[in-house]
Length: 419
Picture 1 (cartoon, rainbow, N blue to C red):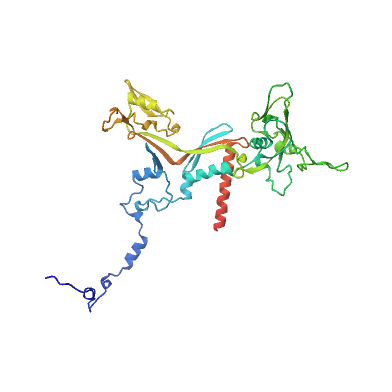
Picture 2 (picture 1 turned 90 degrees about the vertical axis):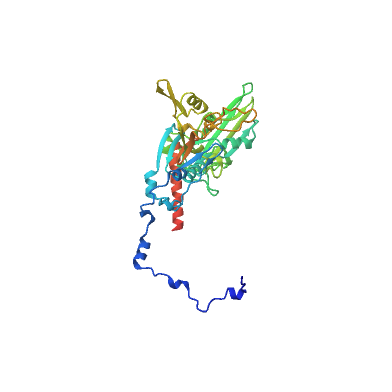
């Protein structure tokens, strides 16, 4: 027989109700001390390092046939605490692991490796090089005569993009309230004319003449008793400075085309260069480009011999793979130049590798092959190939040193605000 209870009967507490926590055991002092001093890393069953598959995800970007995976970096200290691995950023560990290896330098281009840093730091250097390092660039152009087909505004814009070979550290910034003087302004003049009956004349940057004494264009006539005023107020000649005595200021390249003059056409102007940064205008950027990429890592998961080895070498346009003679007529493919890998993934295309089982469709070749499981393309997350191409104002190694100083100054300001 089934009995039904009303709500009051079902949820009515008995008269002799006793709390359950009365049965709880008291914690002893020895147990409290053990819990306070307990460290999971001291347990013998906890591994001292990450398992191989997690270590691969932490340190490598895996480049699959469709898209890369594991691209993010984990900087959280407790990310792998469950296996007893401390992932926090420590100064001692950074000092031991970080290094810079110079690969090549030719005066205008510098290639080096930065090892042991995060992508955020590498990108900070890139952005500082592009936008925050000061240089000297033409800001004002005073056109006295221009009968060429190039309009004054276009001509001034082209003049501003001419790189100037002058150390910006020797000059000061020109503010709105300052007068152009020998410490903040560089003056050039340009006067080119194509005579009638002559062929078209190319006006190049070598025609720009440095005026160490300042502007020669008269701004205001001084009358018979005073000296005429020009557009600058130089108290001394710039070539009297020891830095410029034997090193006159010129454009970085003498053969940049400014304009073309037809017969009878003429250009006469004066250009004033001042100090600025690329964040204000791209003409003040000291680099033609600054870029980085993660170090490629190419691994063959099986041995490619004979015809397969030749196909693999032929598949790569960057010549990453090479043939090694094993003797007795045997040939094996090896990874000879992994640094040159551009991630074109031709070695992962369907024309190569082990046969795979696919439903045979109309017109499908049964001999299609796939090398996805036999060639591994990876990128090392903390190893960056960095390249700097200078415009000529400063050597690339000096540019990188100045970028480090700017980043250091930013960090000091943040620390000062936080403290």
